[in-house]
Length: 171
Image 1 (cartoon, rainbow, N blue to C red):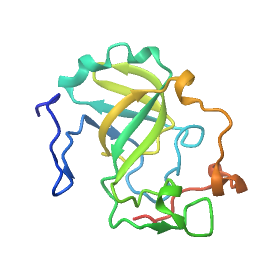
Image 2 (spheres, rainbow, N blue to C red):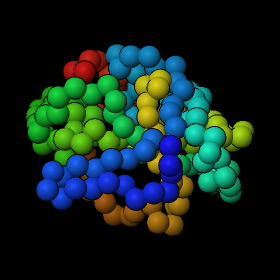
Image 3 (cartoon, helix red, strand yellow):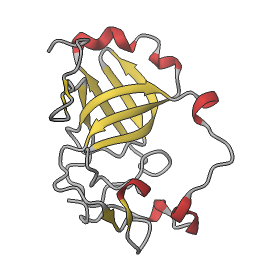
Image 4 (tube, rainbow, N blue to C red):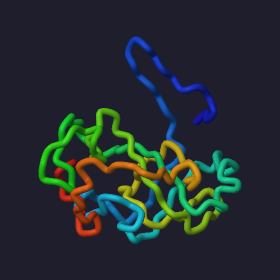
């Protein structure tokens, strides 16, 4: 693949093309019974395998404790504009949830870096299916990413995500 080239965007058809930079190796082979979020819930060690040609891009990443993992929700079927999320019993607009049934099947997770060997990032607490295509990696920077005085919308009702596993509603 030719990395670093401009991505194709056609304004008339609204089509974009991205190259994957790697894939996830995890214990989760199916969506059923996997964690619904990563950090503090998943309790696992997984691998983010980056294309060998991109290995120089991992320089200095091990100095960070956490990363954002941006990925393609490759097992998602039809999108939905309203869903009943795992942590509620009422429907909400897709953009007010973290449901994977998005118009653009793009996911975002935060994972703790355990260590990096060659082109493999070993991460803790990740909520990805095995084989998930990785689109990008970015460092989590507390000074920028830890926003104070936020609101959590409908989630403020306080359901415990540690007691919730995926159940097939988003296949």
